[in-house]
Image (cartoon, rainbow, N blue to C red):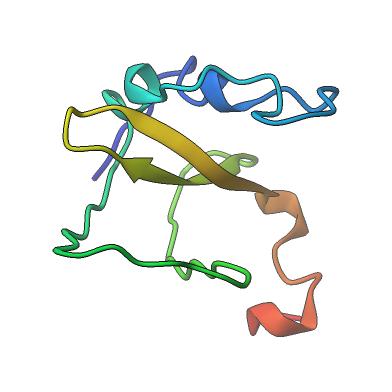
Length: 102
């Protein structure tokens, strides 16, 4: 069970900004400290391309909610740089044919 603070995710959101880094702070550590984070250690340099995909199961007693996902690059010094982000209003679950519920 992961309980979320109401202010988590604020470091990665500015939908009106036009240029990199989209108006967000370069370092995402403040949000990461209160988020569910999954880390994959990488021993050598990698290049990533394409659209990231996240699959999850969410259960809530609330009648509405949102899921927010961020992909960050973690530097050896702990700095967390936002690569991309996505958000889903759970009221739209089942709207998209690709989500298996549509």
